[in-house]
Image 1 (cartoon, one colour):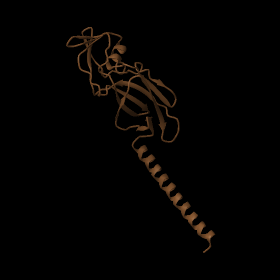
Image 2: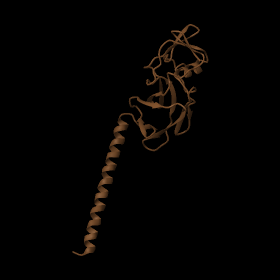
Image 3: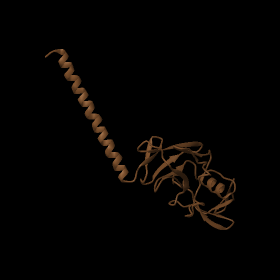
Image 4: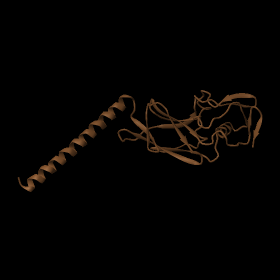
Length: 201
């Protein structure tokens, strides 16, 4: 056997192996795509290298104050996605407060009262969105800004609990990402009173 024919045989084997690998990757990709579609996932939200698929259970992330966070919304097919996004009070972790002796909760099962998108400066583009958590921001800061009033805090705020949720909706499907941010419980805020009484300046 000549050296040329031996080299041709080796090259043929390499090409066959590469073709087999590409075929396996394509089959796995198609199976994954149809598997996700069968569960109602036709899009995903991407943040910091993580992908959150439509229709999946909620996830938790931790964020830092003093930063703006960018998210993208992508289709599994590469097409554009007609989505909506908002930041709402988390219905799991309750914070109670009062304004002029009237009792409120951070979550109220009310579409308007529970929407904090404006407080976090949520900005949407065609394929991405962003929101900001200012430096020295706290849960009580958000409440005070939302209601534009002095409040009396009636329950504790715990730093590592997610009090807000990012909700991205496409059609009938949603991605829910609960988030907490550092210092959310211990930032001094003027116009907030604790019960038992203790003024925070």
